[in-house]
Image 1 (tube, one colour):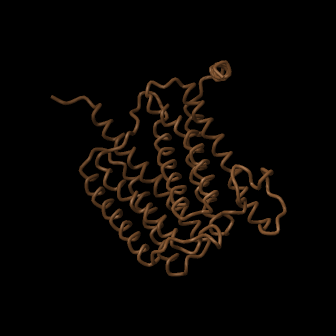
Image 2 (cartoon, helix red, strand yellow):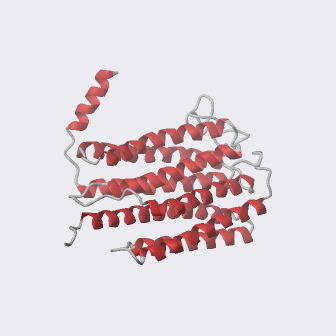
Image 3 (cartoon, one colour):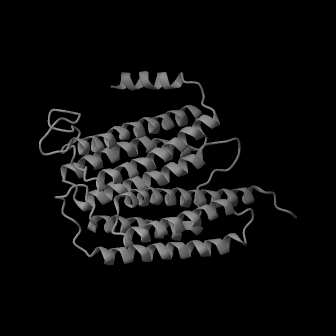
Length: 311
């Protein structure tokens, strides 16, 4: 085992030092694929394909791929299997991000830690997905599966902003944004609870969370309004700072408002499948925009701190 690891390390060491653009491009690809795997998971759920492959890691006992079966529709099998295949793509890109970070030999070890978290997180997600299937899509296992994706999207966004470039300070987050980040976590958690009580469980036979959907939707909406209110307060604070990241702030506000609008239309129209998938993608977009502002504020603070003091 040690000799194989040594051989692998030797091969990685022979890879030419990567450029900034290559590292940044792969890091962005990590964000995109992490967000898309959450959306494909939503497609699996709304099409009732969650148990199209009823076991894990095999699709069927004795077969890694879909097979004809009288109890499982072929389309549902391939939708679920396609999601599993895409997980492999996500994993390959995550590994590539780690290899590039390792070859860069960064002085900022945080960059390397974030890069390591990408393939490790994909592996953990795969295991969570397997447990979810083996427990027949119990609502709370599906919720954990989705929340793990939200964490990965957040970390992947931090990875993008951690890619080293010359002597520019990297974003590490700001204490100011702890409150909005905490409220966003509340939005996401309550959102999974709404999903758990809603009509799309991934399989028609899956038991649902036994709480009225309307009640959970109102709690979810309350978190969203509070989150939006906290962003307004952040905007007032940014007015008094040097070089505030206004563009990131405006993008975040626009994404949050659009996501809220999708949620309202979704609620009023009986939770149609297409809007559910778009809502999940919108949630990933909100996470990316929030994490980008988090890093942007910290980068601005770092730049100000590095400026020489006038006497």
